[in-house]
Length: 322
Ligand SMILES: [Zn+2]
Image (tube, rainbow, N blue to C red; front, side, top):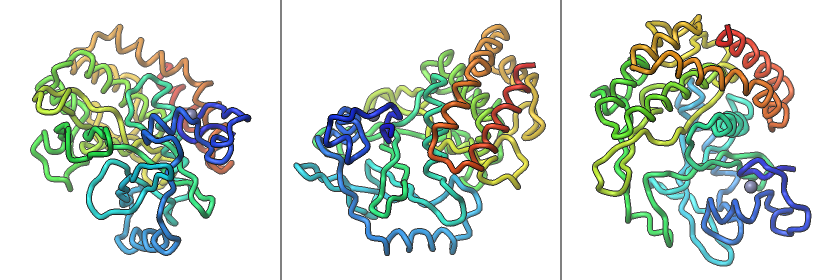
């Protein structure tokens, strides 16, 4: 069994690791505590959560409601459900889509392996032995768990482009690059990072990278200097929801489907990225093909989803490798 946080093998001689399925070091890094917190959520709450998703007619896998958890430190740390935004966010299983937490964990891990900056994330084994996806917000620093202090301002690209939330699918990746050029103090680096994230999302079947899934974040509280925030909410939507034929959430070279390598190169040119650099970034992803397939086969996805994902990654990489 591998660590549910970093995905690397666990040591056999640690009692904590054997029961929690987390490295001691990963528990410390993620929760700032010695032991893995216990989650105080009853089966009734989880059931209610699942029903709520159905009743709200959730049709896009990425928009399932997120549960806010408050962490109480101590010898027996606990995570309790609260109804205000806090530092830890839990996304449990939902009945409409199989293995959503496992799928998000896998794609976030693949993103990390690609060199994409991500928010802290992990899987959490629930009392009923199902997995939930857990993530820690990055706009709140949590020394001593004082969540009020040290807020980094964070604004998503929907707000930055003056659009309403419901218009988050209206826009283009070319506009995203304009937002970075206008507001980021790391323009060059952030444009490359954006480019890699878009190519990677295509390869990973993540067709839900809309305007709210990109944000700028302050470099330090009140610095008023912004950079592209680490990546979050990355899901292989094309596997989870094969009926959706769009390959991308926003337009790339005026298209959302039938994407070809030349469309990525057109974006690079539009964003002022040298074509040589763009080719290099694409090639890096192409060379990771076997790594992605191995990660997929080692993942917690059911076998039929693994084979679907295999096929998708292989097809898409052959398209950008042309
Ligand atoms: Zn670990």
